[in-house]
Image 1 (spheres, helix red, strand yellow):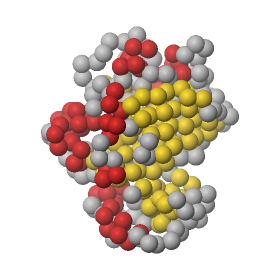
Image 2 (cartoon, rainbow, N blue to C red):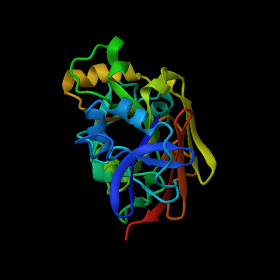
Image 3 (cartoon, one colour):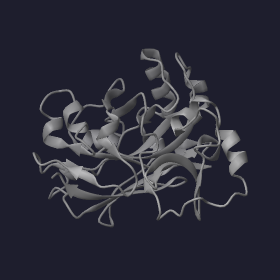
Image 4 (cartoon, rainbow, N blue to C red):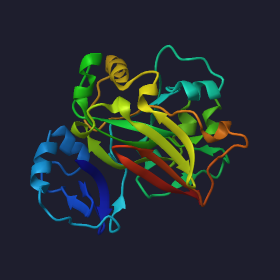
Amino acid sequence: MRLTSFAANGKQSYGVVTDDGIIDAGSMVENAPTLRAAIAASALDRIAEAADGRSPDHGLDEIEFLPVIPDPDKIICIGLNYRTHVLEGGRDIPKFPMIFTRYPNSQVGHRQPMVKPRVSDKFDYEGELAVIIGRTCRHVAEKDALSVIAGYSCYNDGSVRDYQRHTSQFYPGKNFYHSGAFGPWMVTADEIPDPTRMTLLTRLNGEEMQRATTDDLLFNINQLIAYLTTVTELYPGDVISTGTTGGVGIYREPPALMKEGDTIEVELDGIGILSNPIVNET
């Protein structure tokens, strides 16, 4: 099942994505007005049953896609998690996951514009696989890690490279307003039993920039969840963006950085294509 958050007719909701449109699920579960709340209520199976055979309430061109989870408690990002990306930046292979966080207002949904900040011309793409947590969990063993996942999505960890390098902490370059993207939807975990067998692609204006398979992750999803839940408690709707592969724009000759008028796409087989135009900050 594919699920996304959206806005239509001035109202925000969430729903089941079909080839013909969106089935609004915002009223299907009591006290679950958001997708995050529906995940927390363990209601995804009920939503699937209620949506079965029902006609869409909105066409895909009639809605505004929002970030899949607009209101997560945490967005946890993993840096330097593909060998190709570590090596292209001349860094050492990390011994532990390199972790930073994003704020919800640093991201947009599918088809919404990613904003190049006025203070920098070093706005870069990072195509990634995102994991959405399905239940509250702490101290999860690696062997059990996939059982706490609600689903998977595409993520573009848009990075303002000069601000990222101001200090050893990546935070400034990763949290500019509307600089990242999350979508187009979440595919539930039952449809992706093996997330290590996915192909990740990033295209800038139709030209392939990044390609990798998710079995190339230095720290795989099981290891990341085990490590993170040792540190903190994860909640339903929390997002883990698992890192990008080589081919980012800053290390190309000449650099291939994003500017107004560009279109950036992140694609994962089994999920779909996250596509965003680039605009300048006003």
